[in-house]
Length: 86
Image (cartoon, rainbow, N blue to C red; front, side):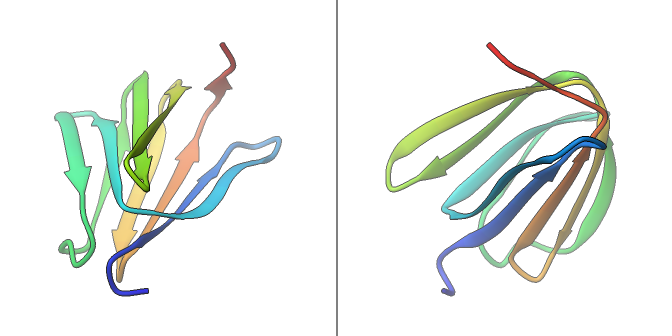
């Protein structure tokens, strides 16, 4: 769907998230960044921090410990070193 982003969050152990979302906010190495549908492609390293994503007005959060983010064609792939469970 054109108004959504496909978000995947993967660790070396498992697939943590694989769903369509409205917005992604991630802890980039140069600071927090947000991604909406139609965003320009880029790749960046991630620092430890909170990954937030919204779907249907509901915000969900995951604590990440480093990794990479790849943004392209309404897809956000997060390759996290580790996801910390609450």
